[in-house]
Image (tube, rainbow, N blue to C red):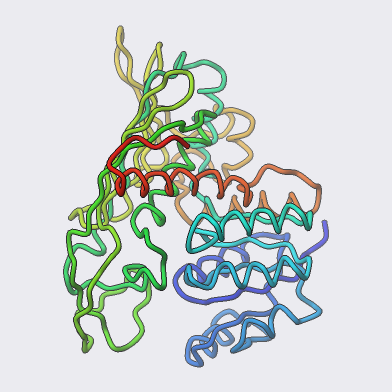
Length: 376
C-alpha cells in the first residue's frame, strides 16, 4: 500500500473533520493545508503537526509533493478550486455541493471524467455499517418490492434570527440552502439505498426567517454567534422545504427538510416501505435498523459484525455495542476513496453521483418557482 501525501484546503469545521479522519487511516499522510486565517493556520500547525500551511490555496495546489487534495472551502469556492485541481490531474475529494448551480456541477463532473482522475464527494452517510447492511437487505429482497419512500432531515441550528452562517447568503452558498445542504444528502441516500431514480418532483419551500443578525466577525458552522456584534441582513435562501416524489417502478415518496426545528440536531431519517416489510434508518441512532412487520412483531436489527452482510462487515471497525458514529462514517468514505486511487475501485461517491443528486435539487427549486410537477 502506497501512502498518499495529502493537502487540505480550508480548515473550518468540515476541514478539521477531514484532517482528523485522514489521520485515522493508513493510506494518507497530511503534509499541507491552506487556510487564509492566520490564527487558524497557526493552530493547525501546532495541534495537528502539519509541516506546511499556506495562506493561498493556489500555492498548495502548486506544491509538487501533493498527491491528493481535499477541498473543504465554502460553496462559492468549490468550482474554481476543483477545476484547478482537476486541470493539474490531482485526485480530489470535495465537499458538496460541487458548484453554485447545476451548470457548475455538470462542468465539474465533465472535467473530472474527461481527465480520468478519481474525483469524489463527501456523501459520508453512505458508509455507516448499518447503511451498508440496509442496502444489502434491500437488494436481497428482504423488504420485498419497494412501494414508497419517505423521510426527514431536520436541524435547529438556524432557528433564531440571531443564528448566522455564510450558507444563508445566496452569494456565498448558492440560491438553495437547506435543500442543497442537507437535502442533497437525503436524496443521495434515497438513490443509494434503493437504486431507484426520481423521475418527477413537486415542492414547496420557504424562507421563514427573512432577516438575520450577521456577526461582524467570523462564525464557524454550528457555532454560537449570539455574543458577537451584528448587523441585520436580508435572507433569500430557504429554511424549510417539503417535496413529493415520483420514482421509477411506480414508487412514490416524500421528504421534509428543515433547519429551524427545535430539538433536532442532525436528524436525518429515511423509511423504505416494501411489499413484505418496511426498513427505517436514523442518523442520530445509527447503530440500529428498524424493521416494520404487518403480521408479526416489529423488531430492531443491531449492528453486529459477523451477523451483517459481507459489505457491511467491512465498514464495522468495532464489535457490537461499541457505537460507530458520524466521524467513523466519514473515515470509511475516505478509505473507500483511497482504495479507489490505489486499486481503481469505483465504490465511492463520485462527481457523477453528485451531479445526479443535484439535478433533483435543481428540479425541486424549479417546481416551486413554476408551481407544477417537474420531470427530471
